[in-house]
Every structure is written in structure tokens, then in C-alpha cells.
Amino acid sequence: MALRASLIALAILAALLPADRASAGGFYLAPRGTGPLGRGGAFVAGANDPHAVWYNPAGLAWSGDQLLLDGTLTLFETTFTRIDGGGNTLRPARGYHTYLPIPTLGGSFSLDELPEWTFALTLQAPNSALMDWPQEPDAPQRYSLLSLEGSLLATAAAAAAWRPIEELSIGLAAHLLIGSFDATVALSACDGVICSFPEDPEYDGVANIALPTVFPLFVLGAVVQPIDALKIGFSVSTPFNLEGSARLRVRPPPAAAFEGAEVVNRGAGCNHEDETDPCRENTRADTQLEFPWVFRLGVEVTPMTGLRIEAAAVYETWSVQDAARIVPRDVWIEGALGGGLEYEVGPLSIPRQMNDTISLRLGGELDIDIVTARLGFSFENGAFSDAYLTPLTIDSDKLIFSGGATVNLSDEVSLDAVVGYLWMASRSVRNSAVPQANPIRPPGSEVETVYVGNGDYEMGAPFFGLTVRWRLDAGHIRGPGTEPQNAEEPEPAAEEPQETEPTAPVGTSADPSTPWYLQGEAAGTGGATPSPDPAAEEPAAEEPPPEAEPPAETARERRRRLRRERRQRRREQRRRRRAR
Image (cartoon, rainbow, N blue to C red):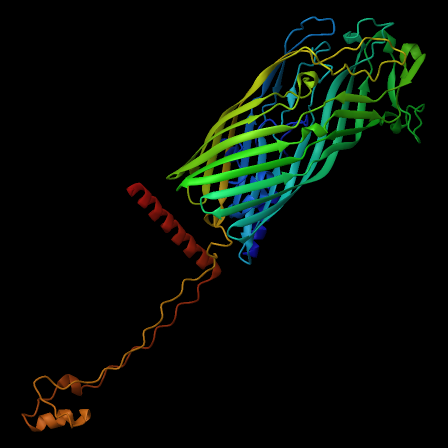
């Protein structure tokens, strides 16, 4: 058993693939995972596969031994029709999510030696959107975002669930967020003197920031099952931050006033006047972006055999993210105005002022022979008021409608599928409070503030998902209330031979006072002498030697036998259900 568990863990680790690219704008588009998404994300009390590592690790106690490869594809699109600082309606800009699936690879396993414990390893990417926007110098959304290309975020996780009694499971998952957040945006250097139009593309510089990150987070959860027909689940996820020293690249504007200008590092120990010094181009900035606590609560009921319905609520504390802060470290622009102007690149603070969100979810599933059908629905309020909504993070009130199914191809292999639609409310913003970013603007500039979020937003997303899962040992679950996998059926006790007393020959009367071993002789004296029985005179045949006992059943043979017996019981159950 220990060897098999090691092989499961090795198979998971050996198959870890690069995670999908994902943005880190401050929200998750939809619940993750094909099975949970088919239930509308209501997967807190009813979590029963490796996705429990994300939703509620206590649900691993019902996962058994299985490997899972999952991918969901969200075809997110949005249209932003901006109104510029002069009140002009610009051409619509279309943003869309790169058509790459959001993957999850994971597995759960348990040990015969520790029947109360279930363990899991997973690798997954956040279910967020990597938006592609127009890249032209005059793209309407350029002051909010040009690109998130290059962003790569994933979490590797290890989890365990402990089920000391049949009615309670407690789980803990440790996630390690790894990857890089990469964003490109246009910055205005218009000073109001040489340049009089603050949105002149000739005076736009382009900044790119790349922040590598490694940050731990944890998910703690519990499931209580007071009766077979009721489960109550709760979990909490700790927050994490995207913060640290980021690489900063700034391309000066193409205007004649910046011809020959360079962006250099003037930090301590760096000779910015020596063009051969590699430190000169190592421009960096301190960055910070906070992510929320996540609280989940779910109640699942089983009103009839094979039918499970769950209602769940998810609360996320996005109000911790009030701004995205970027503070350059001794980064200067040199050589502007023909070499007569040099100045330090200033700090950048993008107002966010996000709101806490709550998601209400309802979903269920029904077993129909070898198929499990799912339906789900959820609602979540948007994290931004109109004043702070920009193309950097597209968000609004959301409704999710989903349906899916699992087909059990065998006791070990099954396929999950989901299809649905993410509807997001359109927004018309006329009171934007997010100003144009201008940290490369020369000191002393006098330019009226330009706000970049005004305009009309339309958005929506169909989505699809597919999962392949392999249940080792037919997904046998250990723990309280289940038979151990290596349990041996008791052998029937051998019957002891019973002694029987010989009886008198038929047709004779025996004297009660005569001993039984002389009754035959006594009876013979009163009648004819019986004829000898040839068979009685023959010597008794020798008894055959006892057969050798069959060899003891090995652990592997015992597992195979129990697996065959479980399959037979399931076939009998299916036949009885069909008969009803």
C-alpha cells in the first residue's frame, strides 16, 4: 500500500505541466473545475474529489484514490467604448481572453495504515482572464491597459483530510502561488507647454512591469455530517499579496522633445554614466497589490438516493485592495530636450477602491445508472463601483448558468463535461475617478486631469470544461464507516464429527440387559446364522492422503478479489434500481 501511494504521488509530480496564463486583476471570472462548475460552484459541503483542495480540503475524505486532469475554457469578451477627456466618443475597443484552457492536475490517495487520513497533491491556475486589447498607439483603452501578455500564475498545493469519526472531517491545504505578473500600459508625458493635448499619442511613453512572485496561502475547512442525508461544510482561504521588486521598462515617447532620451538606473553602486555598465539598464520598482480572504459555507441535502442538492455562499474581502502601487527605485529619464532635461520617474498609484463580494450558489446532481447529471446557478455582485471601473479589470454583477454530466466508462475511468454561460451586467460610466497615469511627465507640468474609465462596457462569456479521472481500486474510500481494503472474510468454522451409536440389526429383538457389543451375538443364537457379507470381510480401503492447503492469499490477490466483489455488488444495485 505504501508503494502504491508513492507511485500515485510520483505520477502526479512527474506530470506537472506549465499552468495556463492568467491575469491577476483582482477577481476570478467563475468557479474553477468542470464538476464544481456544473453545480454552479456549489461545492463546499459536497466536495468529493481533488478540487476540494481549492474549495474545502475536508471533502477529500470522500475523494478516495483517484487521479484527475481537468480543463475549463472561458471565452470571455468585452467591448469598451470610451469617452475621452474632451467628451468625445471614441471607436469601440474589443478585449478578449486568450483561448487557452485553465488547467487543474491533481490526485488524492489514502493509506491502509492510516485509514482516517486522505492526502492530495494538485497544480492549478487561477480562473482569471488574460485580456488582449488593441495595441495601436491611439488605442482608446491604452491608459488603462495595453496587454497582460507574459503573466503566468499557478498554485501548487498539498493537502490532507482527517476523518476521526464518521460524522466529521477536517482538512488543510497549503498552496504556493508561483509565477509572474506582467502588465503593459501607456503613460502620458504631455507637460501642457510643449504639448497642449494631454491625450496626444506622440507624447505617450510605454511602461512594462514584470513582478515574479512566490507566496504561500492556506485553506482550512471542515465538513459535518450529522445524518446520512445532510452535510454542512465551511472553509476559509488566507489572503496573499503580489508584492516585491519588479523589473520596470519604460520606453520614452516618440515626440521630438524626447529624441535621444534614455531611462536609466541611478541607484547606489551603479555608474549610470558608463554605457557599458549592465546595472545602468536594471531599472526596478517596488510594487504591491493585495488579494482577499475567502470564506465559504455550504449545505448539501440528499432527499432521495442518488440526488444531491447544495446551497452555498462565498464571501471575498476585496475591499483590502484600495490601490495598485508602483514606486520606481532611482529611475531617471536623461537626454530629453536635446540633453538639456533630466528628471526622476515618479511613483504611480492606480486607485482601485474595490468592494467586498458575495456569491450565492445553488447546484445539484442526480445519478442515473452510469451517468451523473448536474445543473447549477450562481449570482455574484461586482467588485467595482462605476467610479473605479476601467479596462484594467473588467468586472460587474454576474449570473452563471451551467449544466454538465459525468459518464462512468468503467468502475475506474470516467469523463466529466460542463457547458454554460457567464452573463455580466453592462455598465455606463460617466463619473470615473481613475486618472491618467503620468509618472514620466516633467516636473512643473500644468495639465488638467484626464479620467480614463468613462464609457460603456459590455461583456459576457460562454464556457466549457472537460475532465478525465481515474479511480484507483475503483475509488475505494477508507475511514470510519467503511470496510478496510485488506479485510478478510471470516472462514466458516469446521463442523466437528458427531459420534453415533450402532443400532441393532433390523428384524431382531435385543435384550436390554445385554451389552450393546454382544447384542448381535445374542440375537444370532436365537435364529439362523447370518450369511457372511463379502464386503464386510474385505479390508477397508485406505483413505486418500489429505489435500495440500492452497497457498495464502497475497495482498494484491486480496485487493483484486475485493475489487471484483465491489463491482458485483454495484451491478446488483444497478439491476435492482432498474427493476424498481
